[in-house]
Length: 66
Image 1 (tube, helix red, strand yellow):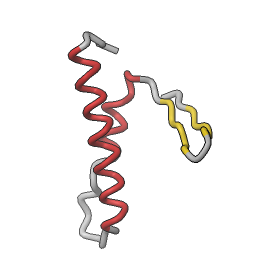
Image 2 (spheres, one colour):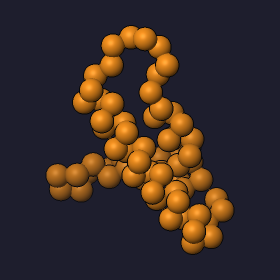
Image 3 (tube, one colour):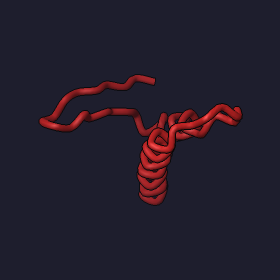
């Protein structure tokens, strides 16, 4: 996966090829182990995965097959 990160004012901008979005979402899934998990980290992971899912869905509706 070729990705880049840059700063844009007060934001970090992460560029990821659309073809790699699904793999990234899979990697964001919660670990199945029973170790304690941070609620904040879980919320961030779920939020990012959800946003990527919406983007992936929109791309599919528009015919992106990447």
